[in-house]
Structures are given as C-alpha cells and as structure tokens.
Length: 437
Image 1: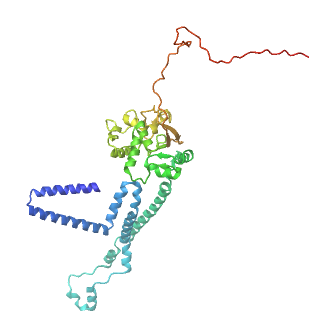
Image 2: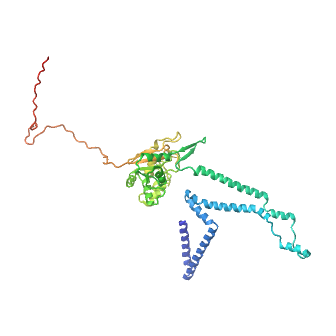
C-alpha cells in the first residue's frame, strides 16, 4: 500500500510539473489548490461511501489476508457479513411475491370514481380494463417453479458449505503443526512424530541452560516443548538479531562458528525434508535467511552468490559453490550422500528438490551431529568448545639421537671416570651356619 501511494504521488508530481510549464503562476496556484481540494473531497466521500457499504472493510481485509495465510482470520468476519447480505437479497427477491400476494395492492382511485359515478363511463376515453387472465399473469411474477428451484439451490449451497467447513476444520485446522500425517495407498495413515521426538530429546539430553539457534519459525516450539532458550522466536521484533542468525546459517562453517561463539550457542536445530519430501524445510526457506541477512550485512552476504550464473537456485553439482559450502547446506545434507532411498534414485537424492545433491563429502570441524529424528525431519548439532591449545598442523620436530658418551672433565683432556662423593660402602657379612638337630 505504501508503494502504491508513492507511485500515485509521483504521478501527481509529474502532472503538476507538466502543467506548471504551460500555465501562469496565478493560474497554477489556482489549479493546485483546486486540485488538492477536489482530491481531498473525493477521498473523503469515497471513504464515507465505502464505509457505509462495508466495501472498505472487505478491501482492507482481503489485502491483509493475502499477505500471510494466518491472517485469513481477519477476512472471516467480513466474508460472513457480505455473504449474509447476498443471501438476504436473493431470498428477498425470490420470496417477495408471496408477501405481496398476502397484501394485495390498493385499487386505483380512478376505479373508485367509476364505481361512484357510473353515468360518466362514456366521458373517460383511452381506458381499457385488463382481462382477468392478464391480471393473474402480472401477479404471478417469476412463477412458483422458479422460486422453488432457486430457494432449494440456495439452501443446498448453505448445507454443503456447512459440511465442507466441518470437514476442513476436522482434517486441516484441527491437526497440530508439530505432528504430520501421511496416507498410504490402502488408505491407512502414518503419523510422523519427528518434531515431538526431537524436542523431547532436547529436553532430556541437554543442559537446562543450553541455548539453541534455529530459524524463528521454531522458537515457540523449542521454548514450549523443549524448555530451552532460543535466540529468535515468533515474537522477535529486532530485525538485526534475526539477520545475525540468517548470516550464521548462510556463511561458511568458520565464519558461522565465530558468530555462534559470540552468541553463546550450544546447539543448532534445523528442519530437513529431503528424505520424506517435506516442502516446508529450511532449504526452501533459506533464501529468506539470505535476504534478511543481506539487508543488515550487505558486505558479507549477497543473494546473487547463492544462484548459478543462469540465475537458478540449485542444490546439485551445478549449484553455486557458496551455497554448497554454507552451514545450512552442510547441516542439512550431512551423511545424506550415503543414503539411497530406493533403487530408482542414486544416493543423496533429495525428494523435495528432485535432485541429487552436489556436495556429498561433508565434514565438520566445529560442529558434531547430536541427534537426527527417525525420518530425518529434525537434525540437531552440537557446537564444539574451543580447545585449550590449537592443534599443530605440521609434524613434530625430530632430534638426532646420539649414543651416550662418558663424562669428560674440562680440566684435563684425559678421560676420567666420574665418582660419587661420600658414597656409602656396603660390607657384606657372613651368614652363620645352622646346626642340624
């Protein structure tokens, strides 16, 4: 809406510049104030009219509901009101004839005059009485058949809508977002409980003061079900903090480790749907992490680096090297290159992206895998602590081993054997012989 308003202002400014060159100063001022007053009046009357007819409420509700799926709740009341107005008008139109028949119209005053003065009938010309059949046709209107058909169709529509709403509520909106369900060919249902499994592991196997880094979508779930501290959640208003998490996810492991150490991160949680074909995983959300991070750190993160030269976002061998080596990619596809899902696809085939991953030899230096759920939907990594000493990359130095030499005195060149001063002298005694009895 703001962009549309700026566009309208630019058009108005261009029009005023066009008119300024063709009018005098006095005429331009008059046109300017007249245009402003006219525009304000039109806007005011439009708002009043749209408010009076419920149209402004409907337009604003439709706009904001289109921004996000969860904002569909703002559209529900106005849809109910508009549908009620539509059904009311339809029923009033098709059921109104019966009401008119119960209250017949008052006869024309001219007919009353004819009854009072029957002698003056020949004085009034041009008036012909309608036949009885014609009067009945005009009173019937649309006819009882059409009214009955339309009424039944509208009632059936309302009943079907009630059944549809009940089905949608029971199958879609009543299911929790942390429990996924899939159906087999025979109609049986499989429950994918990876989220609760991972959160339970996090609650039972980590320190109660551990800090978990994840994308903000899962902040409330981690805090509520795992009882662990998160960096960002669904109520985080600090965009720079979200951008810092996005920067860590989209950077290489070394740069991401520095960010995680500065934020005191103990564990990293990601969602990966390549095994079961879950399209709402973090790889599909990854570009939003990059865009938010680029908004705060344009020198370090650039969205164009994660696309191919042809402008494609690919996870196979043709993918961007920056993407294939970033932390999110490595955490998602760690050990996935060794997994073959079925005989028709090669090892490391991503069912969500329908592609064989391009980087199968993934190794970590600062992270280690802590937990992976049954269907690989949730993966948790532990951030290693800094070592007391940095490991040496070169081989230890070898010294020349020389044979032992006897001590040489500095006073003389002769080789003399050293001795210990005041050395104790042990005298051996003789054991007395024992007499045999």
